[in-house]
Figure: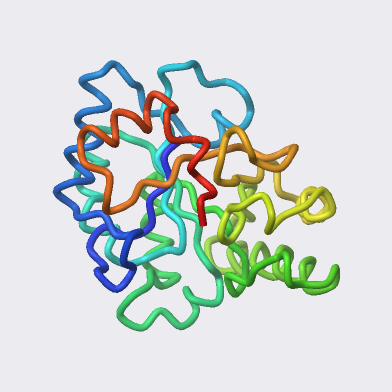
Length: 217
C-alpha cells in the first residue's frame, strides 16, 4: 500500500512528490504488473500480492494536480483528511467542498484525526476526542461517516493497543500505520513515498526492501 502526502507542495519537504514523478511511479507499477485496488479491500485482506492501494495523508490541496490522471486510469484512491485543517484550509489544504467533490467522484475519504496530534502524547479522553470528533465532522460535511483512519505520524511508538480499541469503539473498521513489519497489531501497514524515491528506489519499495526503514526517524 502506497502512502503519499503532497504532490506539489514544496513546503512539505521530503513528503512532497512532484506530479510528474507521481505519474511516473504509478505508470511504472502498472508496467510491472501491479493492479490498483481500494485501501479498504487491502485492510480487509482481500488484496493479492500484486495489488496496490493509493492513499494521501493530510488532505493537501496539491493532490488535485494528479486527480485527473487517477481518474483517467480509473485508479481508486483514499484521502485521509485532518478535519480541523479542512475547516480552515487556507491555500494549502482541501476544503470540505473539495473533499465533497472528490467523494462524489468516487474517492474514499478517511480520517487523519481532528488536529494531527501525536497520540503518544494524549490521554485517553483526548485520543477519543480526536477519533470521534474527526469522524463526526466528516459525516456532517460529506454525508457519511468514514470507516478508515490513518495514524498521525504513522509510527508504532505513536500508537498502542488502547488506541486501536478506541478507534474500533469510535466506529472505524480499519486503522492504517506506517511499516508492515513494525506496525502495531490490528493495523494495516503502508509504505511512505518521499521526494527521494526515484525509479530505482520506488521499485525497491514495491518489492518490500525498504520496510525495515519505514520508521527510521
